[in-house]
Image 1 (spheres, rainbow, N blue to C red):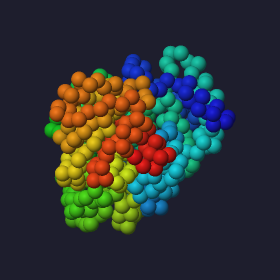
Image 2 (image 1 turned 90 degrees about the vertical axis):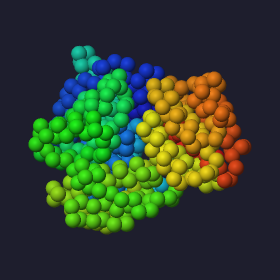
Image 3 (image 1 turned 45 degrees about the horizontal axis):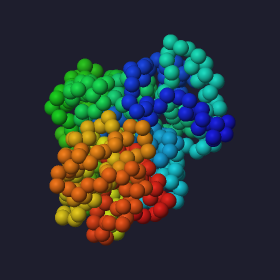
Image 4 (image 1 turned 45 degrees about the vertical axis):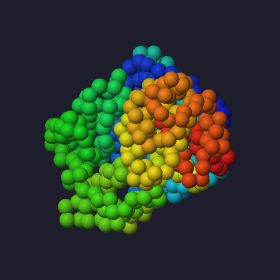
Length: 463
């Protein structure tokens, strides 16, 4: 199978991420498809040591930080995350280097953000092996169509098994209980911060969402790490763990953190657990919310150590210092300062705004904004309006991209200068012609927008 043939084959699977209406029917949650396919392949997931991370915000960052520490400790790490910024090969990685130091671009190839993501050749080889079994399953009409996400989840487990990884770090897609990744057993699971998201399918209260996310906690032998939560979600998670006689590490209680220094370049933090203290840890990811994410990753590392995994303090320090997770308050230009961030819900936008307020003081912020149609546009913009002076609204090349109207922008950003552009290129060309060196250009609202802007900047090297 050539790579073009592989791409054509992958495109034949239903991809709800590209649907104008995300997850249009509940067949997306039929786990039996993944279970049957993995069984036909010999259940490779059962031979992996898995760290499973669910949550509303920060789960990708937690996965990247955890994988970085494990890699620095000398382990071969499978890393499965979603969605992707540039190419779907980014979702499946065998980590042997974290790729860059956080200043973009690490290379001139816009589709190879991570040097350790699955290669075109390996992807083709895996599909060649899996295709007969996949087609056997696809012939069963009662199971319904296998989705793109389910296909990649199976590919990841099979690939990691073939590559004999020491640890596998897995990010859930949506939810937890019925997420395709939850087919696999996990040694350690973590729940990051929860907020209202995908309410049509996960529930319209924090308690309902917490029940879905808690579904990855399913074994009395698991070690569990839980980020700080609103009381409503915390109580659900507490009761769920109690039913399994599990005693989770609660971030903020069992594990405490302190921010020692914080600026636009990096931040220095300390963690403590009982009588153990880890001072002056440098964190490459920016923002106070990333300190909490790093604390969750630290909790995972501590849980691994409790289970006998050898991870020295130097690996912890180097992993946190060099972890690379693009599109999260990522600086991609200096004059003017250009920042990319994938904030796509009000809670993430709040984290972004509060971080930038502490960094940028009174600098003029020009916002390049693109949001998906199914997101809380009003909630996101209410947060961003607090720091921006001018708004350039645009849209990613994606079927769910929201098309802004002039009257809508005036309502969302009252009293602010607003412009609508039909595509990303025109938005960036406008900013290039009007931004001053002392300005800040903030590009946010959608992971699809950030991914496409990143590719554009990689080719042009600047605003």
